[in-house]
Image 1: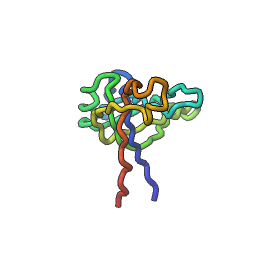
Image 2 (image 1 turned 120 degrees about the vertical axis):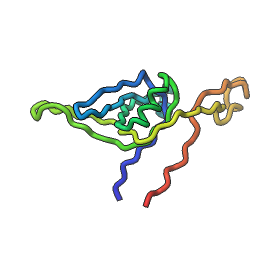
Image 3 (image 1 turned 90 degrees about the vertical axis):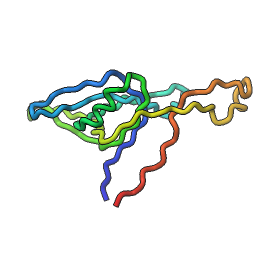
Image 4 (image 1 turned 60 degrees about the horizontal axis):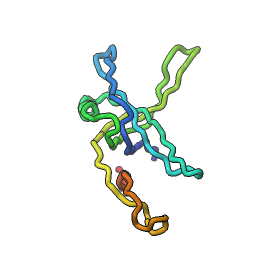
Length: 137
């Protein structure tokens, strides 16, 4: 069975933008910054993922958030095509169906005794693990 489900936990990158459509609907757009696992050279890389919603309820929640706030979104991956047939532009984004502010947990690295200075390693802010989504019927 085909499935298109996205779950992201990250930080809001900037203020939310709202654009009215000719149909009378409003599309709400924002970006989420999601950290990747540490790169070989030790640098942490991030992805900036575009998100949109047409839901007024989801838009109301996101509108109340500030840049750098943690957020959890669920939705579907979408490819949208814009422009005339001679110059098509392809955009990929997450169409969000649910959103909630996310409380990050403070945790220490896996084994602080491995590091110089013993257990005096400063705690880092990391998002908590999210359980795998249950299968739907």
